[in-house]
Amino acid sequence: EADIYQTPRYLVIGTGKKITLECSQTMGHDKMYWYQQDPGMELHLIHYSYGVNSTEKGDLSSESTVSRIRTEHFPLTLESARPSHTSQYLCASSGMRTGNNYGYTFGSGTRLTVV
Amino acid sequence: SQKIEQNSEALNIQEGKTATLTCNYTNYSPAYLQWYRQDPGRGPVFLLLIRENEKEKRKERLKVTFDTTLKQSLFHITASQPADSATYLCALEDDYKLSFGAGTTVTVRA
Image (cartoon, rainbow over all chains, first blue to last red; front, side, top):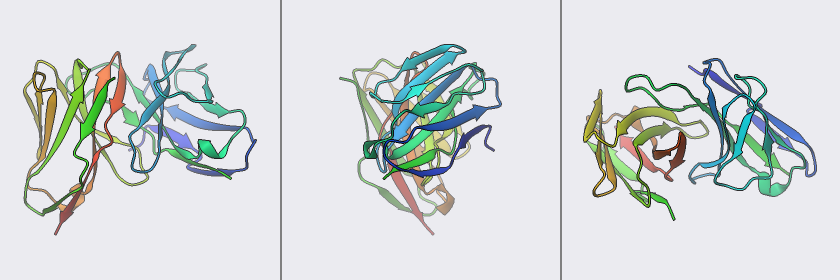
């Protein structure tokens, strides 16, 4: 069951457009993440947040920006989309470690195509 | 630089057999190592976490080992089923951030 929701699921958009990918979680997790994944390749961390008003850039340089105004919401924005931004974007969250079941919860992803 | 390497070759096995996947890493000292399953077009799903002071962890038909001296984790799926067909990702945690390997694709034949 998905407790983390990403919209849209698929997006085809023209070059130069501004887009926002939405991510919301209902688990009250303090930590949230954005990963980028190309087909057959590993996930790369592009942004993360450890709580409200906290955002950091990840290991992979990205032209996108994020905000964290509410615990449950972590949107990603591209001011001017380019074909090089075509990829799958995955949002994830994690909370307190409990027992042996600590792990990230991922959304289903947004597949972005810039034409 | 830090690197996580998983079996680059896809794994094709007969139903009922055991699949063994390898994850090797360099230039990390992870406190935690995690394994995820990813189906095509979907986000990864958390399977197991093992701590640096644990040698082995089991969950149903899954078993993970963690050797910090060899810098290696092995992931076993016993009594495999066609529903186990997916890509399996190894991930290392550093300061609450996960870095992932490219994954190994497993196909279980009926």
